[in-house]
Amino acid sequence: MNPTEYKDQKNYQVAPAPDVDHLAKVKGWNFEKKFDFQEFLDSFATIGFQATHFAKAVELVKQMQEEKCTIFLGYTSNMVTSGNRDIIKYLVKHKMVHVLVTTAGGVEEDIIKCLKPFAIGVFNVSGRSMYEKGINRTGNIFIPNDRYLYFEKFINPFLDRLYKEQKEKGIIHTPSQIAFELGREIASEQDHEDSILYWAFKNEIPVFCPALTDGSFGDLVYFMRQRHPDFNIEIAGDTKKIVDIGLNNDKTAAIILGAGVVKHFILNANIFREGLDYAVYINTAEEFDGSDSGAHAEEAITWGKIKATAGHVKVHGDATIIFPLLVAGTFGKKEEK
Image (cartoon, rainbow, N blue to C red):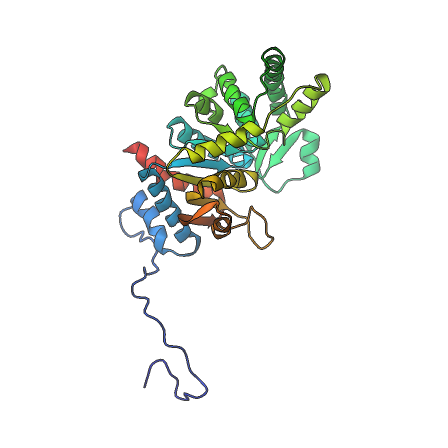
């Protein structure tokens, strides 16, 4: 009897299965054998689901490196809140990425951590209780109010200097210029070598922050404008600057942790060169609501933000788990060699 048919052919019939022998077989890591970290990461390719997407991300990052792409690293502020700050700093210190795009907290909290550390707490805690104790919470990370007092003491003299340069020299700084100057200022702090901004300054890696005023820095800018109504920050220059970086390099690639403004700022800048050559997304956003945050790479291709021929993957998951493993299997391995 034909194995694709039931006895009663008229009522019970299945379509003949196509040959899938050429595809990789589903298989996990064998813990019976001697453990090798790189082989362990390689085994993710045949586990399935997001593990397979992760393995593809590893391969794409390796290709970015081999082809000497200009790599745009985008990350939301919570990546700096978390220990991923130290991993991003490592990449910037060793010049393994070439352009940074972040949000206001990604700038602010990098500075604050040079002054005072954050603490591991819990997710499930009373908001009222924490507020009364003067402790802010981002997920399960606790940030006491006094951290922002240190930040204010650091930033206010810096803003005064910017205003003086504006009045005396006619210089209105862009967010990337502000980030560069902040990196210079951080060099005098005790823990400056832990700072992303410090190493970006030292290695002349641009840090773009299109939403710089959306946070504590913006609060202090508000008070600055109260004192000096003509104080200003110039944003048009950074648009030209990031677009020119894309236009002046043969191949561009993006690794984007989280989404929102950092994701779109990178993608939109690459429209002018007909799209990125590689893109790796790591986030938990979904596309059903039409948001740019949840949009997959195939949607970006329709806009010309990513090339139709580009290697791309989205890994759905927590970047505090995925990103350290990704770096360990790519940039970290390269540094070891």
